[in-house]
Image (cartoon, rainbow, N blue to C red):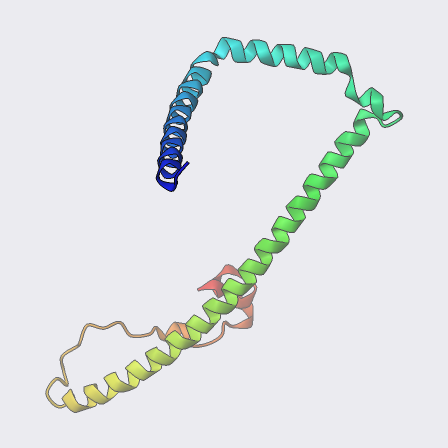
Length: 161
């Protein structure tokens, strides 16, 4: 055989493979649809009942010997407790990292606020003679929040002001 004949033969084989791949995909899609349509609620219940009966009849725990069912339940509960504690530890680490990040952001925001206050105070000093009696409508910090609570308030909910 010459080279051109081999080349045509390989190209035909590749086209055949591509066609079969496409047909296989179509068949798989049709099988999936038929499978889903076959599983009606009644059939699911019947299969569950039959499967449960067969498992109970086989009694797989008998093969384990002296290990009782309560031991398996205890093992399952302790493993689930282990997973829960690991998840809680991970959540605590994540919360701690978030708190550290929030603290850094708060420090940055505080520094920016101080810088803005100084810039604003400089601008207010420049405009002071023109607007001495007019309020600019901005909120002023409440002096009530500047000091620590008195000892009697510290033990009550008033300290949370």
